Length: 481
Image (cartoon, rainbow, N blue to C red):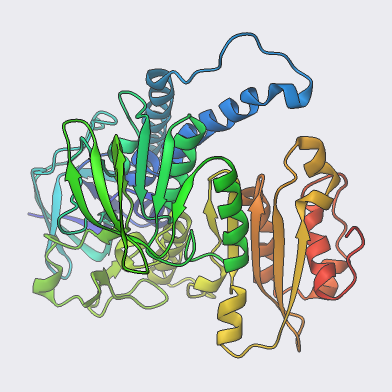
Protein backbone atom coordinates (compact mmCIF):
# COMPACT_ATOMS: atom_id res chain seq x y z
CA UNK A 1 0.00 0.00 0.00
CA UNK A 2 1.35 3.40 -1.01
CA UNK A 3 2.53 5.73 1.76
CA UNK A 4 0.29 8.78 1.90
CA UNK A 5 1.08 12.45 2.52
CA UNK A 6 -0.70 15.76 2.43
CA UNK A 7 2.11 17.30 0.37
CA UNK A 8 4.96 15.81 -1.64
CA UNK A 9 7.60 18.24 -2.88
CA UNK A 10 9.84 17.19 -5.75
CA UNK A 11 13.20 18.88 -5.26
CA UNK A 12 14.92 20.24 -2.14
CA UNK A 13 16.33 23.53 -3.41
CA UNK A 14 15.36 26.94 -1.98
CA UNK A 15 11.78 26.60 -3.18
CA UNK A 16 11.39 22.94 -2.31
CA UNK A 17 12.78 22.90 1.20
CA UNK A 18 10.97 26.09 2.20
CA UNK A 19 7.68 24.67 0.85
CA UNK A 20 8.20 21.50 2.86
CA UNK A 21 9.01 23.32 6.09
CA UNK A 22 6.11 25.76 5.78
CA UNK A 23 3.69 22.91 5.04
CA UNK A 24 4.92 21.06 8.11
CA UNK A 25 4.51 24.20 10.24
CA UNK A 26 0.89 24.32 9.10
CA UNK A 27 0.26 20.79 10.34
CA UNK A 28 0.58 18.85 7.09
CA UNK A 29 2.32 15.52 6.61
CA UNK A 30 5.15 16.26 4.18
CA UNK A 31 7.79 14.45 2.15
CA UNK A 32 10.50 15.73 -0.18
CA UNK A 33 11.88 13.71 -3.07
CA UNK A 34 15.54 14.43 -3.90
CA UNK A 35 17.84 12.72 -6.41
CA UNK A 36 21.18 14.49 -5.95
CA UNK A 37 21.83 16.60 -2.89
CA UNK A 38 19.82 18.51 -0.31
CA UNK A 39 19.53 22.29 -0.65
CA UNK A 40 19.61 22.32 -4.45
CA UNK A 41 21.85 24.25 -6.84
CA UNK A 42 21.66 27.46 -4.80
CA UNK A 43 23.42 26.18 -1.73
CA UNK A 44 25.60 23.56 -3.41
CA UNK A 45 26.66 25.18 -6.70
CA UNK A 46 25.11 28.63 -6.91
CA UNK A 47 24.20 31.46 -4.57
CA UNK A 48 26.15 30.51 -1.45
CA UNK A 49 29.42 28.91 -2.62
CA UNK A 50 29.86 31.54 -5.34
CA UNK A 51 29.63 34.23 -2.67
CA UNK A 52 32.36 32.40 -0.78
CA UNK A 53 34.57 32.65 -3.88
CA UNK A 54 33.69 36.31 -4.32
CA UNK A 55 34.49 36.97 -0.66
CA UNK A 56 37.98 35.60 -1.26
CA UNK A 57 38.22 37.95 -4.23
CA UNK A 58 37.07 40.89 -2.08
CA UNK A 59 39.72 40.17 0.55
CA UNK A 60 42.41 39.86 -2.12
CA UNK A 61 41.31 43.12 -3.73
CA UNK A 62 41.44 44.95 -0.37
CA UNK A 63 44.79 43.42 0.57
CA UNK A 64 46.21 44.36 -2.83
CA UNK A 65 45.29 47.99 -2.13
CA UNK A 66 46.61 48.04 1.44
CA UNK A 67 48.78 51.09 0.70
CA UNK A 68 45.62 53.08 -0.06
CA UNK A 69 44.67 52.60 3.59
CA UNK A 70 48.08 53.42 5.06
CA UNK A 71 49.08 49.80 5.55
CA UNK A 72 52.14 47.87 4.49
CA UNK A 73 51.93 44.18 3.66
CA UNK A 74 55.16 42.28 3.09
CA UNK A 75 55.46 39.86 0.20
CA UNK A 76 53.27 39.23 -2.84
CA UNK A 77 49.61 38.44 -2.36
CA UNK A 78 48.76 35.30 -4.32
CA UNK A 79 45.59 33.25 -4.53
CA UNK A 80 45.81 29.70 -3.20
CA UNK A 81 43.34 28.07 -5.59
CA UNK A 82 42.97 24.83 -3.67
CA UNK A 83 42.34 26.66 -0.40
CA UNK A 84 39.85 29.06 -1.99
CA UNK A 85 37.90 26.20 -3.57
CA UNK A 86 38.08 24.11 -0.39
CA UNK A 87 36.60 26.96 1.64
CA UNK A 88 33.77 27.38 -0.87
CA UNK A 89 33.02 23.65 -1.00
CA UNK A 90 33.14 23.43 2.79
CA UNK A 91 30.46 26.11 3.01
CA UNK A 92 28.35 24.16 0.50
CA UNK A 93 28.64 21.06 2.71
CA UNK A 94 27.57 23.11 5.71
CA UNK A 95 24.48 24.40 3.92
CA UNK A 96 23.64 20.89 2.73
CA UNK A 97 23.81 19.54 6.27
CA UNK A 98 21.76 22.50 7.50
CA UNK A 99 18.81 21.62 5.28
CA UNK A 100 19.00 18.02 6.48
CA UNK A 101 18.81 19.28 10.06
CA UNK A 102 15.80 21.47 9.24
CA UNK A 103 13.95 18.53 7.68
CA UNK A 104 14.58 16.44 10.79
CA UNK A 105 13.52 19.29 13.08
CA UNK A 106 10.29 19.84 11.14
CA UNK A 107 9.51 16.11 10.72
CA UNK A 108 9.77 16.22 6.93
CA UNK A 109 10.39 12.80 5.35
CA UNK A 110 13.13 12.52 2.74
CA UNK A 111 12.56 10.16 -0.19
CA UNK A 112 15.82 9.54 -2.06
CA UNK A 113 15.46 8.92 -5.77
CA UNK A 114 13.93 10.13 -9.03
CA UNK A 115 10.29 11.20 -8.94
CA UNK A 116 7.70 10.73 -11.64
CA UNK A 117 4.13 11.95 -11.35
CA UNK A 118 2.13 9.08 -12.82
CA UNK A 119 -1.21 10.76 -12.19
CA UNK A 120 -2.53 13.58 -10.02
CA UNK A 121 -1.98 12.53 -6.44
CA UNK A 122 0.61 9.82 -7.16
CA UNK A 123 4.39 9.87 -7.33
CA UNK A 124 6.53 6.88 -8.23
CA UNK A 125 10.13 7.08 -7.03
CA UNK A 126 12.93 5.05 -8.65
CA UNK A 127 16.66 4.80 -8.05
CA UNK A 128 18.61 7.94 -9.02
CA UNK A 129 20.08 7.70 -12.51
CA UNK A 130 21.77 11.12 -12.47
CA UNK A 131 25.24 11.14 -10.97
CA UNK A 132 25.98 14.31 -8.96
CA UNK A 133 28.72 16.55 -10.31
CA UNK A 134 30.32 16.06 -6.93
CA UNK A 135 28.89 14.38 -3.82
CA UNK A 136 28.26 17.45 -1.68
CA UNK A 137 27.03 15.58 1.35
CA UNK A 138 26.03 12.07 2.39
CA UNK A 139 22.52 10.76 1.89
CA UNK A 140 20.77 11.52 5.21
CA UNK A 141 19.98 8.58 7.47
CA UNK A 142 16.47 7.18 7.70
CA UNK A 143 15.55 8.25 4.18
CA UNK A 144 12.86 6.46 2.23
CA UNK A 145 13.52 5.05 -1.23
CA UNK A 146 11.91 3.43 -4.22
CA UNK A 147 8.18 3.04 -4.19
CA UNK A 148 4.80 4.58 -4.85
CA UNK A 149 3.67 7.53 -2.75
CA UNK A 150 0.44 9.46 -2.74
CA UNK A 151 -0.38 13.04 -1.79
CA UNK A 152 -3.29 15.43 -2.07
CA UNK A 153 -0.90 18.08 -3.33
CA UNK A 154 2.29 17.67 -5.38
CA UNK A 155 4.68 20.61 -5.70
CA UNK A 156 7.26 20.50 -8.49
CA UNK A 157 10.44 22.35 -7.49
CA UNK A 158 13.01 20.72 -9.75
CA UNK A 159 14.93 23.88 -10.65
CA UNK A 160 17.02 24.40 -13.76
CA UNK A 161 20.39 23.57 -15.32
CA UNK A 162 22.89 25.41 -17.56
CA UNK A 163 21.73 25.93 -21.13
CA UNK A 164 24.08 24.91 -23.91
CA UNK A 165 24.32 26.40 -27.40
CA UNK A 166 24.53 23.95 -30.29
CA UNK A 167 28.14 23.45 -31.34
CA UNK A 168 29.45 25.22 -28.22
CA UNK A 169 28.46 22.63 -25.65
CA UNK A 170 30.46 22.65 -22.40
CA UNK A 171 32.88 19.73 -22.15
CA UNK A 172 34.00 20.21 -18.55
CA UNK A 173 37.62 20.74 -19.58
CA UNK A 174 38.01 23.66 -21.97
CA UNK A 175 34.44 24.98 -21.97
CA UNK A 176 33.00 25.27 -18.48
CA UNK A 177 29.59 25.73 -16.93
CA UNK A 178 29.32 27.18 -13.44
CA UNK A 179 30.04 23.70 -12.03
CA UNK A 180 33.61 23.64 -13.36
CA UNK A 181 34.11 27.39 -12.90
CA UNK A 182 33.51 26.96 -9.16
CA UNK A 183 36.27 24.43 -8.60
CA UNK A 184 39.22 25.07 -10.92
CA UNK A 185 42.27 22.92 -10.25
CA UNK A 186 44.42 25.91 -11.15
CA UNK A 187 43.84 29.45 -12.28
CA UNK A 188 43.80 29.85 -16.06
CA UNK A 189 45.91 32.69 -17.40
CA UNK A 190 43.08 33.80 -19.67
CA UNK A 191 39.32 33.29 -19.71
CA UNK A 192 36.51 34.07 -22.13
CA UNK A 193 33.03 34.42 -20.61
CA UNK A 194 30.08 34.01 -22.96
CA UNK A 195 27.14 35.90 -21.48
CA UNK A 196 27.09 38.81 -19.02
CA UNK A 197 24.05 38.00 -16.92
CA UNK A 198 24.46 37.55 -13.17
CA UNK A 199 26.28 34.21 -13.45
CA UNK A 200 28.64 35.28 -16.22
CA UNK A 201 29.59 38.65 -14.76
CA UNK A 202 30.10 37.29 -11.24
CA UNK A 203 32.58 34.71 -12.52
CA UNK A 204 34.21 37.31 -14.76
CA UNK A 205 34.62 39.56 -11.71
CA UNK A 206 36.01 36.75 -9.53
CA UNK A 207 38.58 35.57 -12.05
CA UNK A 208 39.65 39.09 -13.02
CA UNK A 209 40.30 39.96 -9.37
CA UNK A 210 42.39 36.79 -9.12
CA UNK A 211 44.61 38.13 -11.91
CA UNK A 212 43.14 36.26 -14.88
CA UNK A 213 42.95 38.02 -18.25
CA UNK A 214 39.15 38.10 -18.76
CA UNK A 215 37.14 38.81 -21.90
CA UNK A 216 33.33 39.00 -21.83
CA UNK A 217 31.17 38.54 -24.93
CA UNK A 218 27.54 39.70 -24.71
CA UNK A 219 24.98 39.55 -27.51
CA UNK A 220 22.91 42.41 -26.08
CA UNK A 221 23.81 46.12 -26.11
CA UNK A 222 24.75 46.27 -22.42
CA UNK A 223 26.28 44.13 -19.71
CA UNK A 224 23.71 42.65 -17.32
CA UNK A 225 20.92 43.17 -19.87
CA UNK A 226 18.06 43.09 -17.36
CA UNK A 227 19.43 46.04 -15.40
CA UNK A 228 18.79 49.74 -15.92
CA UNK A 229 20.95 50.94 -18.82
CA UNK A 230 22.52 53.80 -16.85
CA UNK A 231 23.51 51.52 -13.98
CA UNK A 232 24.87 48.97 -16.43
CA UNK A 233 27.02 51.65 -18.08
CA UNK A 234 28.53 52.67 -14.72
CA UNK A 235 29.32 49.02 -13.92
CA UNK A 236 30.86 48.42 -17.36
CA UNK A 237 33.16 51.40 -16.92
CA UNK A 238 34.40 49.98 -13.61
CA UNK A 239 34.89 46.50 -15.09
CA UNK A 240 36.99 47.95 -17.88
CA UNK A 241 39.06 50.01 -15.43
CA UNK A 242 39.88 46.72 -13.71
CA UNK A 243 41.22 45.39 -17.01
CA UNK A 244 38.24 43.37 -18.18
CA UNK A 245 37.66 43.35 -21.95
CA UNK A 246 33.98 43.57 -22.93
CA UNK A 247 32.46 43.00 -26.37
CA UNK A 248 28.81 44.08 -26.65
CA UNK A 249 26.39 43.26 -29.46
CA UNK A 250 28.64 40.34 -30.29
CA UNK A 251 28.27 36.58 -30.25
CA UNK A 252 30.48 33.54 -30.16
CA UNK A 253 29.70 31.98 -33.53
CA UNK A 254 32.20 29.15 -33.37
CA UNK A 255 34.76 27.64 -31.01
CA UNK A 256 37.91 25.79 -32.02
CA UNK A 257 39.53 23.61 -29.37
CA UNK A 258 43.25 23.26 -28.95
CA UNK A 259 45.19 20.95 -26.65
CA UNK A 260 44.78 23.29 -23.68
CA UNK A 261 42.97 26.36 -25.02
CA UNK A 262 40.06 27.52 -27.12
CA UNK A 263 39.79 30.01 -29.96
CA UNK A 264 36.41 31.72 -30.19
CA UNK A 265 35.20 33.29 -33.42
CA UNK A 266 33.44 36.41 -32.12
CA UNK A 267 31.03 37.92 -34.61
CA UNK A 268 30.52 41.67 -34.19
CA UNK A 269 27.48 43.82 -35.01
CA UNK A 270 29.12 45.06 -38.22
CA UNK A 271 29.61 41.50 -39.43
CA UNK A 272 33.34 41.38 -38.75
CA UNK A 273 34.80 38.40 -36.91
CA UNK A 274 37.53 38.56 -34.25
CA UNK A 275 39.33 35.44 -33.11
CA UNK A 276 39.96 35.39 -29.37
CA UNK A 277 42.13 32.69 -27.81
CA UNK A 278 41.84 31.85 -24.12
CA UNK A 279 42.88 29.01 -21.83
CA UNK A 280 39.29 28.40 -20.76
CA UNK A 281 35.77 29.54 -21.63
CA UNK A 282 32.68 29.80 -19.43
CA UNK A 283 29.30 29.29 -21.09
CA UNK A 284 26.84 31.47 -19.16
CA UNK A 285 24.02 31.87 -21.66
CA UNK A 286 21.17 31.12 -19.29
CA UNK A 287 19.50 28.02 -17.95
CA UNK A 288 16.72 25.64 -18.91
CA UNK A 289 14.10 24.19 -16.60
CA UNK A 290 14.26 20.59 -15.40
CA UNK A 291 10.86 19.52 -16.73
CA UNK A 292 11.84 16.29 -18.46
CA UNK A 293 11.16 12.85 -17.04
CA UNK A 294 8.76 13.99 -14.32
CA UNK A 295 5.64 12.82 -16.11
CA UNK A 296 4.23 16.29 -16.67
CA UNK A 297 3.41 15.85 -20.35
CA UNK A 298 1.50 12.63 -19.74
CA UNK A 299 -0.82 14.26 -17.21
CA UNK A 300 -1.30 17.39 -19.31
CA UNK A 301 0.61 20.04 -17.34
CA UNK A 302 1.07 23.10 -19.55
CA UNK A 303 4.50 24.52 -20.29
CA UNK A 304 5.59 27.63 -22.16
CA UNK A 305 9.09 28.09 -23.59
CA UNK A 306 10.27 25.21 -21.44
CA UNK A 307 8.84 26.45 -18.14
CA UNK A 308 5.78 25.21 -16.25
CA UNK A 309 2.83 27.62 -16.50
CA UNK A 310 1.41 28.66 -13.13
CA UNK A 311 -0.88 31.31 -11.67
CA UNK A 312 0.12 33.74 -8.93
CA UNK A 313 -0.23 30.99 -6.31
CA UNK A 314 1.83 28.26 -7.98
CA UNK A 315 -1.13 26.33 -9.37
CA UNK A 316 -0.77 24.59 -12.73
CA UNK A 317 -3.69 23.80 -15.01
CA UNK A 318 -3.93 20.30 -13.45
CA UNK A 319 -5.69 20.22 -10.05
CA UNK A 320 -3.39 19.15 -7.23
CA UNK A 321 -0.19 19.87 -9.19
CA UNK A 322 1.85 23.00 -8.41
CA UNK A 323 5.22 24.42 -9.46
CA UNK A 324 7.59 26.92 -7.86
CA UNK A 325 11.05 28.34 -8.43
CA UNK A 326 13.17 28.21 -11.58
CA UNK A 327 11.10 25.43 -13.15
CA UNK A 328 8.14 27.85 -13.12
CA UNK A 329 9.92 30.61 -15.02
CA UNK A 330 11.78 33.88 -14.48
CA UNK A 331 13.05 35.69 -12.62
CA UNK A 332 15.31 32.75 -11.81
CA UNK A 333 16.18 33.75 -8.26
CA UNK A 334 16.39 31.75 -5.04
CA UNK A 335 14.45 34.33 -3.03
CA UNK A 336 11.68 34.32 -5.61
CA UNK A 337 11.48 30.53 -5.24
CA UNK A 338 11.30 30.79 -1.45
CA UNK A 339 8.53 33.37 -1.55
CA UNK A 340 6.60 31.37 -4.14
CA UNK A 341 6.91 28.35 -1.85
CA UNK A 342 5.29 30.14 1.07
CA UNK A 343 2.52 31.59 -1.11
CA UNK A 344 1.79 28.20 -2.67
CA UNK A 345 1.66 26.28 0.61
CA UNK A 346 -0.37 28.90 2.47
CA UNK A 347 -2.88 28.93 -0.38
CA UNK A 348 -3.09 25.13 -0.22
CA UNK A 349 -3.69 25.39 3.53
CA UNK A 350 -6.51 27.87 2.98
CA UNK A 351 -4.96 30.70 4.97
CA UNK A 352 -6.71 34.05 4.55
CA UNK A 353 -5.15 37.07 2.85
CA UNK A 354 -2.59 35.16 0.79
CA UNK A 355 -1.35 37.57 -1.86
CA UNK A 356 -0.18 36.40 -5.30
CA UNK A 357 3.41 36.96 -6.36
CA UNK A 358 4.17 40.50 -7.55
CA UNK A 359 7.25 40.09 -9.74
CA UNK A 360 7.87 43.85 -9.92
CA UNK A 361 8.74 43.79 -6.22
CA UNK A 362 11.34 41.04 -6.46
CA UNK A 363 14.85 42.48 -5.96
CA UNK A 364 17.72 41.39 -8.16
CA UNK A 365 21.32 41.29 -6.95
CA UNK A 366 24.60 40.71 -8.77
CA UNK A 367 27.65 40.25 -6.55
CA UNK A 368 30.35 41.44 -8.92
CA UNK A 369 32.75 44.27 -8.13
CA UNK A 370 31.09 46.75 -8.06
CA UNK A 371 27.85 45.16 -6.88
CA UNK A 372 24.58 45.82 -8.71
CA UNK A 373 21.07 45.65 -7.23
CA UNK A 374 17.62 46.68 -8.40
CA UNK A 375 13.88 46.41 -7.92
CA UNK A 376 10.90 47.53 -9.98
CA UNK A 377 10.83 49.27 -13.34
CA UNK A 378 13.89 50.49 -15.19
CA UNK A 379 13.74 53.99 -16.66
CA UNK A 380 13.46 52.53 -20.18
CA UNK A 381 10.59 50.23 -19.26
CA UNK A 382 8.73 52.92 -17.34
CA UNK A 383 8.87 55.22 -20.36
CA UNK A 384 7.86 52.37 -22.68
CA UNK A 385 4.77 51.85 -20.53
CA UNK A 386 3.90 55.51 -20.95
CA UNK A 387 4.55 56.40 -17.32
CA UNK A 388 5.12 60.07 -16.47
CA UNK A 389 8.13 59.78 -14.18
CA UNK A 390 10.60 61.64 -12.01
CA UNK A 391 14.14 60.27 -11.83
CA UNK A 392 16.61 60.93 -9.05
CA UNK A 393 20.32 60.11 -8.95
CA UNK A 394 23.01 60.36 -6.32
CA UNK A 395 26.68 59.36 -6.76
CA UNK A 396 28.80 57.62 -4.16
CA UNK A 397 31.53 60.19 -4.78
CA UNK A 398 29.44 62.67 -2.78
CA UNK A 399 28.89 60.31 0.17
CA UNK A 400 31.21 60.64 3.17
CA UNK A 401 31.09 56.98 4.23
CA UNK A 402 31.83 55.74 0.71
CA UNK A 403 34.81 58.09 0.49
CA UNK A 404 36.09 56.93 3.90
CA UNK A 405 35.80 53.30 2.80
CA UNK A 406 37.67 54.01 -0.42
CA UNK A 407 34.55 52.92 -2.33
CA UNK A 408 33.43 56.19 -3.92
CA UNK A 409 32.50 54.78 -7.35
CA UNK A 410 28.79 54.07 -7.42
CA UNK A 411 25.33 55.42 -8.13
CA UNK A 412 21.81 55.18 -6.70
CA UNK A 413 18.91 55.87 -9.03
CA UNK A 414 15.25 56.13 -8.06
CA UNK A 415 12.18 56.34 -10.29
CA UNK A 416 8.84 57.81 -9.15
CA UNK A 417 5.42 58.16 -10.70
CA UNK A 418 5.11 61.92 -11.18
CA UNK A 419 1.38 62.06 -10.41
CA UNK A 420 1.19 59.84 -7.32
CA UNK A 421 4.72 60.02 -5.90
CA UNK A 422 4.83 56.21 -5.85
CA UNK A 423 8.29 54.66 -5.92
CA UNK A 424 8.20 52.37 -8.98
CA UNK A 425 11.87 51.54 -9.43
CA UNK A 426 15.24 51.68 -7.66
CA UNK A 427 18.62 50.78 -9.14
CA UNK A 428 22.09 50.77 -7.60
CA UNK A 429 25.70 50.08 -8.42
CA UNK A 430 28.50 50.26 -5.86
CA UNK A 431 29.80 48.81 -2.61
CA UNK A 432 27.30 46.74 -0.60
CA UNK A 433 24.28 47.79 -2.65
CA UNK A 434 22.99 44.20 -2.45
CA UNK A 435 22.43 44.89 1.25
CA UNK A 436 20.95 48.36 0.67
CA UNK A 437 18.34 47.44 -1.94
CA UNK A 438 16.02 45.84 0.61
CA UNK A 439 15.24 49.28 2.02
CA UNK A 440 13.61 50.21 -1.26
CA UNK A 441 11.91 46.80 -1.53
CA UNK A 442 10.25 47.36 1.85
CA UNK A 443 9.27 50.88 0.80
CA UNK A 444 7.64 49.59 -2.39
CA UNK A 445 5.74 46.88 -0.52
CA UNK A 446 4.42 49.50 1.88
CA UNK A 447 3.46 51.68 -1.11
CA UNK A 448 5.66 54.43 0.27
CA UNK A 449 5.63 57.82 -1.44
CA UNK A 450 8.49 60.24 -1.94
CA UNK A 451 7.23 62.39 0.94
CA UNK A 452 7.53 59.53 3.43
CA UNK A 453 11.01 58.67 2.20
CA UNK A 454 12.10 62.29 2.47
CA UNK A 455 10.93 62.39 6.08
CA UNK A 456 12.78 59.17 6.97
CA UNK A 457 15.96 59.73 9.00
CA UNK A 458 18.94 57.82 7.64
CA UNK A 459 21.93 57.27 9.94
CA UNK A 460 25.14 59.21 9.32
CA UNK A 461 27.67 58.34 8.15
CA UNK A 462 26.36 55.45 6.05
CA UNK A 463 26.25 54.59 2.38
CA UNK A 464 22.46 54.32 2.83
CA UNK A 465 22.31 58.11 2.85
CA UNK A 466 22.74 57.93 -0.93
CA UNK A 467 19.27 56.37 -1.04
CA UNK A 468 17.59 59.37 0.56
CA UNK A 469 19.63 61.83 -1.49
CA UNK A 470 18.52 60.07 -4.67
CA UNK A 471 14.90 60.54 -3.61
CA UNK A 472 15.54 64.20 -2.85
CA UNK A 473 17.23 64.62 -6.22
CA UNK A 474 14.15 63.32 -8.04
CA UNK A 475 12.33 66.36 -6.62
CA UNK A 476 15.15 68.88 -7.02
CA UNK A 477 16.00 68.87 -3.32
CA UNK A 478 19.35 67.02 -3.07
CA UNK A 479 21.38 68.45 -0.21
CA UNK A 480 24.87 67.03 -0.80
CA UNK A 481 25.29 67.30 -4.55
